[in-house]
Amino acid sequence: MLVQEPNSIPLAGATDVLVHWPAHLDAHAKTYLDLSGLDDLRHISWNQEALTLGARTTYWDVIQDEQCHQEFPLLQHAARQVGAVQIQSRGTWAGNIVNASPAADGVPVLMAYDAVVVLQSTAGTEEVPLNEFYMGYKQMRRRTDQLVVAIRLPRRSYAVQVFEKVGARRAQAITKVGLAMTRSSVGWRVVASAVAPTIRRCPSVERLLEQDAPVCSPDDLAEAFATDTQPIDDIRSTSAYRARVLARVAFHALQSQAPGRS
Amino acid sequence: MSKTELISVSLTLNGEHRSIEIAPQERLLDTLRYRLGLTGSKEGCGEGECGACTVYIDGLPANACLVLTVQVRGRALETIESVQVDDLGSMHVSGATQCGACTPGVVMTACWIKRHPELAKTHTLRELMAGNLCRCTGYDGIIEGIAGTDCAS
View 1 (cartoon, rainbow over the protein chains, first blue to last red):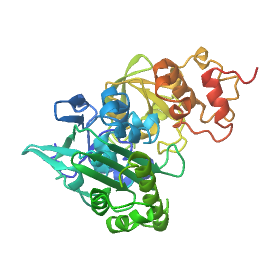
View 2: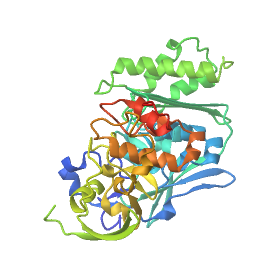
View 3: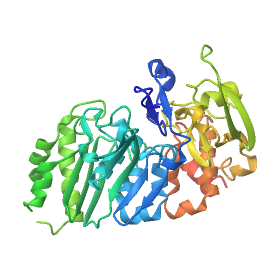
View 4: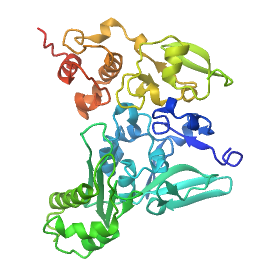
């Protein structure tokens, strides 16, 4: 169907698409591909190497899953901060990826766990690391004939796992600054949200941590974050606030989770 | 909406099998209120924040303003009209309601929490109720009403 209607928009929970829907008459004219009937795409599966989430797997599905809680605690940590139960029950991880908001909460933790996006079309299956999925604001490596069918996360043991979301209030807020951070056998992953056109990893900060550079204050991280991000002033916050808070949040997370690091 | 061709959707509504004619772009909230006359679900914000339109889809709370009716094809839908007075517990004596606009949504989420006592192991009442905004009476009375701690006595 995506081949016949290349401009059609796959619809999972629809919690983003339907916001203020009656006012968006232009959106009504578009073609949507409703995935609601595809229950095969709603699963949480495990094998030796990886956890796989289906394209219709919701935040609530993961919140309720004990093994996810044990092995990928940041997924639950982030999911519980997406809207409230009414959104968590409908919103999907894959939808969060393709909605491509720079302030998404599901994407940073998936990226910090090295998630891979599994795309399928009549031509076959393609896998794209989430870290390489975004090319610019709302631009991504998904052809119009491809459907995200799954998200795969490698199973590893983690020494550090952090997700911090700064919003106007604790519940039901859109992120002003977000940070997901992990450390495993493959190294550090530092992912920032709402400070660039896309959610992105911060290679300069990761390098600094890999080199075990001394981090004695937020200022020691600020320069590297400035290289990796381009925060802007908008309705929710300012560039200066975002830059300052990002470095502070990261500093305090490192102090509490990796005190002996440097 | 009248210009659009209608399509047929079958679902279970408050325990009863129903087949309804709807427009493809129709929100579940509009179907309930304007086609079926079930006006208990309210529209507050229209963006999934206030929770006044909370319904259950296959037993889970959802905002009816953020669902297309075609998406509940074959699903079990429950609305505030299915709630019995006895389900309210101490909510009507705890000061949990004032103007009443948020109340149908509040009651829906509260009844869902009562159906699932296991949630208390992982969640606080306030976290579970975070998707229901009240702009007049405040949250203490609502939380007390759900918890069954009768502050009026």
